[in-house]
Length: 443
Image (cartoon, rainbow, N blue to C red; front, side, top):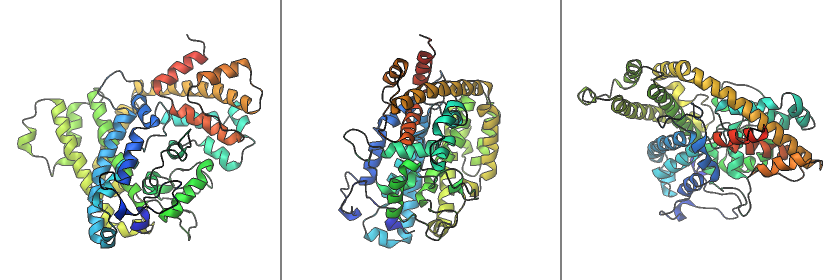
């Protein structure tokens, strides 16, 4: 892979190349990507989607929207810092007009969108959709699909749904948001299909990131960016190098921020929490400043800032140390997995899992979310397939009318099912509850 190709400004439908040197510096193409994501309907819905604590009534905890905004800020810093060093190492990029803020804008936009395809109720929402197709009506409906199409649904992926949402045609907007291919490449965390399933130790192969319905679009992006691995045995596509920075931004934020939410909720004791954070910042903390802070909020804010800065700096060092291996597709690790702070990160995550992710309130609400999405899927899938087969009942018609925003593809059963899953995934936590109550007659 080479940087000039990886930094392509091409957008879906372009017939002429977009050259960096010809870009308007006041309205840079990569910065337009950020604007298009933040004003999109699917991004705005993240304000009412679970990050960790479902249906929280306190303003202290993060939603998917606040998490995504924070990840984009960290991503921008990572991108700019990496960009500065990449430009020093590759002067041909400077000659072509590229600047360090280009790298920051690409990573920030991809990071902003990284959770845009995730269903309500956190990861339990993803599992609920996939589980639905393993038994009963769901299994029966997908039985006539190809193996790859079936697997897309059985192991439903928010990452793949995110790629689909970013590029999905809608009335008047062919090609969806039409983000630059560089940003789309950085967004694709797992550049592979759901099948064949050949697990490797490479971080880009942990899951899949592309539905069969979007394969042609992805292949066009991969070809433009040079992500095609022609000599591959298992990994047919390389991961875009800037994806490592998007992933690092996410890893840094959920390590620190989910931990902070647990503290603010009183689920993690302040003394124990501050002790763990101090281990991350002992080389940069200014004791004379820290001792003057009188509240938990002030101490957390100070330590959070130092911790995030330390992790950013460390990740950039790792990225640049392994840049050649990353460009060759031969770096199988997440950047934080090679961090000198890995032990401290693991300690914090272990506490967060025990005290936050496994908290009784979180678990109970995830159980409720699982049931809610299963019931919604059962009603809407049944109605949409009956409509596809021209066998709708009056009840089916009412269900479809109640699903505002549900688009139904014409003659393809697989895409019809993807449409329903995408609709359910796009629901906010609150809208899911409201629709569940209607379906179950609780009005």
